[in-house]
Length: 418
Image 1 (cartoon, rainbow, N blue to C red):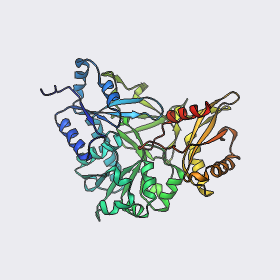
Image 2: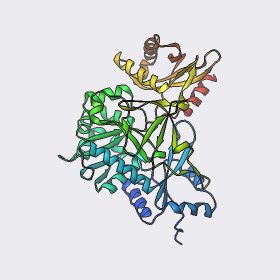
Image 3: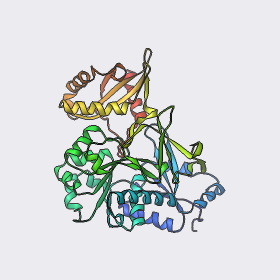
Image 4: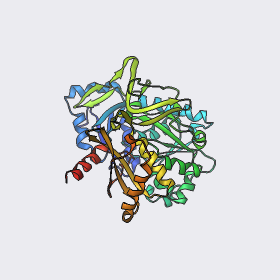
């Protein structure tokens, strides 16, 4: 028996090999005006629970027509399952097309390369953009990015045709470690980098290689990108994520500094037990993100996750900014840091203090590295200086480049219990 038209298609995008097979099923379902729910690795049960509920409740979602449910968040707590109609994704593609035209690029002439998973909105949008603009899409297998020296031969770039690529910082770092892949990247017209903060040393390396990076910011709730920095501005040393796209307004919450977004493509809501819970909005339709930032003449500059900020001795401290600073100063002094994470811990005098987790590139040099990092931070303001340092050989972000801070807080809990 065929599924009723309102029944969502639960698509395990993580298992689809190649990605084109999952994309074909997705597009077929959209052609039937169906809702498609995309699950990542280990998310099938969680997504099924979000979709659970009485048939009448799920049937109500049919009013959105072709749509998708994708996960949002998960780096600092629970994951949200956001509904995004296809029309919102197409509106996002239209705004991106206008941004490209402002750079003098013709969207329909572009080749899209997509190495990101389909169950992330950043991996879904290249498909929507290519279909919306009439461009060509090629999928890059994750295994290929783990062997970046093979990229030039496996995916030669067409001469005289603009190539668009989306990466997370983890992928960019991996490619920059290969001279062949770095030269290949330089042949792209635009390399959007988002999903996580772009570390200062990585940005500096990309500028030295003259890579056309476009740091950007967006969320599942906003149907992906809401601002992006033009590559020429990035290469000129401009920080941040650029000005908002043409269909987006940005502002900061006066009390918290949270980035707030208003646009017509905000998610209608999040699914919980088969029920659609409307996205919490401020008056006049502003959605408040969990990111702190500042807005200057060049656009948005992110300060870090507000739920990861700490209040130490009366000061508000953003660990992510300090991580970037420490990585940059460590690289300047020749320290070989593979991964670095600063976490907040309770302190009876200060309220909270920072604790550093460090993964050295060479394990044998761990103690020496910690001593160097402590020396670097000795002159920092007390609230910004970690009170203790721990070697963590397994420390690493997720494949999407995000830090699961809750996971590493639990690791630190177990360490401090002994």
